[in-house]
Structure formats: C-alpha cells, structure tokens
Length: 37
Image (cartoon, rainbow, N blue to C red; front, side):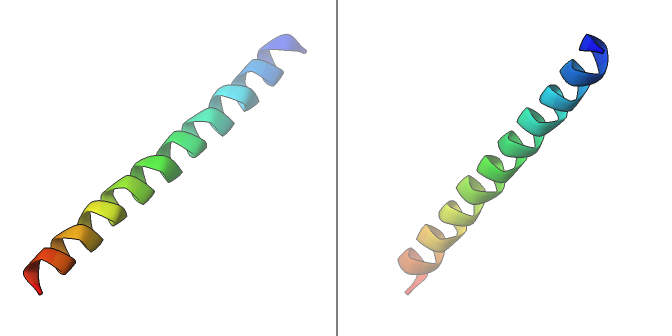
C-alpha cells in the first residue's frame, strides 16, 4: 500500500543523500591532498 511505497521512497532518498555526502567528503579529502602537495 501507500505506507510501504512511502517507506521505500524515503529509504531511497536517504541512500541518495548518503552517496552525496560521501562524494562531498571525498571531494574535500582530494582538495586537502592537493593542498598538501
């Protein structure tokens, strides 16, 4: 029903947010490495 669909939608959005956060932190790490050089 709607509840199951909503749960799945929220879970997918959370996973997308986690991926973006990982990409952002990885980008910051790369910039720090470049500055260190």
